[in-house]
Image 1 (cartoon, rainbow, N blue to C red):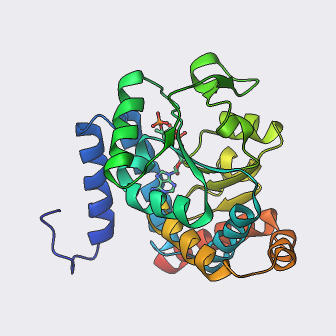
Image 2 (cartoon, rainbow, N blue to C red):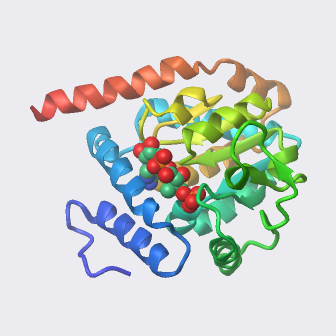
Length: 249
Ligand code: PTJ
């Protein structure tokens, strides 16, 4: 869906940009989403535009958390809705999670456009429009969630979350699985499981691990979750960025 040959060295990156642009045109992605994408791209470039090993381990741990959860929810914002809607619907199916549209810059138009967009990509029930719950400790619009959705979730996947809200969700005792290309961002720092990878690669990777772990026992899943070290994972991502930079220099 883009006039760039697949052989182009920056094909993936250009495709991603095109999706975000199309998302803005469709009323799904906010203008700020363009800036967020640019920020993410810079980190992705430094990581070598690949899934580093520590991110793959984190994706497996995230899959284990989602499979163990009583009530897992995948939070969807304007960027991820544009980048990987079908992949989010697939992950929700595989782990039995709800999808909930939850926006940083919330408007009714964008909420509805994203719900429709997810339905076009195969989602049946999409939460977020009820908005009868609140995340304590943050301002009104950004605090809105479905009481029966994120409000009652034990595990939430929040791709590209804002730091404030990531912190507030953590304070509610929710297990937070964060996808963010910047290992220094507050969301990555406060996450139970930070996945330092592009959502475009991370979401299908979590799904692949979830499929692989479908038959694992509860004890095995718990062992995977308990062996995880978030701080070491963030350190490994920082090292990958520094090493890459040194190689370029
Ligand atoms: O649709 P809304 O209103 O909910 O708004 C969504 C955005 C992303 C615009 C909003 O949450 C926002 O402004 O986020 P920030 O504070 O800019 O943070 C975005 C973070 O995501 C940054 O740390 C980026 O490095 C990272 N990021 C950007 N694109 C990607 C990414 N991480 C993974 N994959 C990406 N494609």
